[in-house]
Structures are given as C-alpha cells and as structure tokens.
Length: 88
Image 1 (cartoon, rainbow, N blue to C red):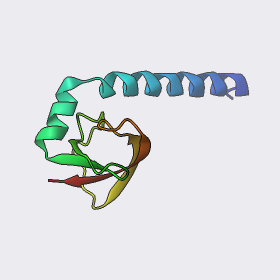
Image 2 (tube, helix red, strand yellow):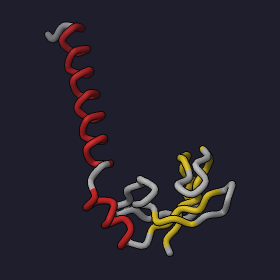
Image 3 (cartoon, rainbow, N blue to C red):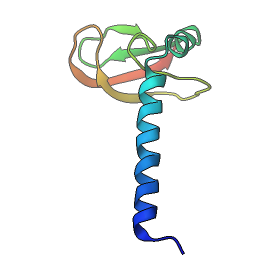
C-alpha cells in the first residue's frame, strides 16, 4: 500500500513538471509560428485591435472552435480583458 505522503509527493512532482513544460512550450517560437501560419487571430474586446494569436502568446495547434474567448492581456492596448479568438 502506498502511503499518503508518497501520493502527495508524486502529485506535487507531477504538477511541477506540468508547470515547467507549459512555460517552455509557451516560449517556443516554432509553436507560435505554427499558430500564426494556421491563421488564428485574437480581437481585443476593449480596443478592437486584431493580432495574430501567436504574437499574443497563445498557442493553438490542431484546435478547432468558433467564438472562443480567452482572458489575456491585449498586445495592442496592454489592458486585461477577453480576447475573441477566431480563424482568419
């Protein structure tokens, strides 16, 4: 039987691994470029600026959705808000 401490330690290690991998992947220029080439753009709900999703720090590989909203900082105006994501 596995003790509660071992389970908690395993879970903590798993979470740390996911956080590190996420940080590395979000900085990947190749993934951002692939997102831009796929035609994903974000539109700021506050200023109306349209920016390539990869340039806004969002990675969408193999994704398909309509009208998705993402809470993020607008690259144009710098304000936090909801960015509407769509394909060009």
